[in-house]
Length: 391
Image (tube, rainbow, N blue to C red; front, side):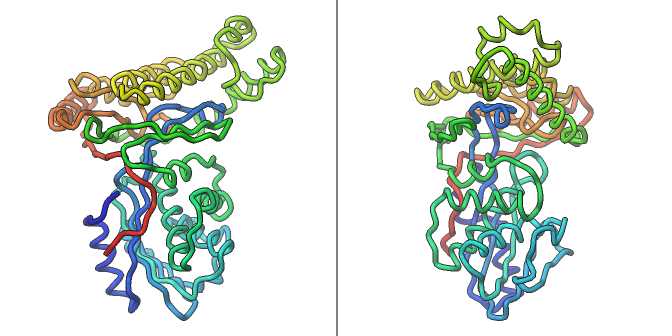
C-alpha cells in the first residue's frame, strides 16, 4: 500500500488551499481480474487482485453542514452543497460515486457536521480497473474514520456496493467492492460467486508484477455485448435445467452434462457453455498452482482463458489478440488475457520484474507494428485494501 505519492501530495496541497481543517489522508486501490472471466453471473469463482494504484483522498471536517468536493480529474466540476441534500439520482456526473459512498455511510452511521474532500488518482479511468468502485470505497472509509468508527470490511463492502446500486443507480454485482476491501499485499483473492467463500492465495510481488496495456479501442459494444452474453448464458441454463434437477447456474453444469445434452443447444449457446465449464476448471487449476507458488501454471491459465474468450465466448477483438500475443512472446511473461467485459479496453499480464524493460519495449513495438496504434504499459503490484495513510 502506498504511503507517499504524487497524487497524494497534490491532494494535500489543494486541500490546504481550500480548507482550514487539518487534513487526514486515505487510499483505496483499484482492482484487476486475473482469472474467472464472466464467471460472476454464472456462479463460478473469480480471482481479482487489488492494485497498488487507486484513489487518494484528503479530508477534513467542517462545522456548517456543507460538502465541498473536488477531484483533480475533474478540475472544473467542483461540488458544494449541504450534506443533507445528498439523495439518490441527484447527479449523473463523476461526483455521484463519491456522494453515494458518503450518503450510504452517513445513512448507516450518522451525519458528518460538514466535509471538505479532495480526490486525486493514479488509476486509469474507464479501463476495467474499477476506478468508480475505488472512489466509492474511499468515500465510505472517510466517513467511518472521521466518525471515529471501526466497522468491519463486510459492512463497508455492502455500503460501497449500495453507493453504486442505490445512489448512482447502476445494477452491478458486489465483486469490485469485495476485491478492493479484501485486498492483501502479495496475494490474489479467490471469490466464489455461488458459495460466497473467500480465500487469499499467494502472489509474490518480487516474482510477478501486474502489467496493464490499453489497446486504445473504445469499448463501444461492451455494454450491449455483455447483456447479450448474460442472456445467452441464461438461455443455456434454462435448457440444462429442463434436463438436470438442481442446476442453479451454469457453474453447476459438468463436462459430462455438456457432452450428454449439448445437441439441445444452439451453436452459440454451446460455445458460451463450453467457456464457462472450462473457466471453472481453469480457476481451480490456477488457485491450486498459486497455493504451491507455481506462477507459471497460473499464467498459462490466464492465456488459455483469453483464447477461450476469443473463440468460445467471442468477446475479444483483433487488437486485444495482438496485445496478448505480443505479451506472451516475452520471456518472463507468465501469461496474459483481456480484462473487463471485452470488445476493446485493456489486457492484463503477469510479468517477472526482471523482464519489465524488455516487456515494455517488445509489447509497444509489436502492437504499433501490427495495428498502427500506440500504447503504454502501466505497472502495478498486489496491494492491500483501503486504509488511512500516515502524514
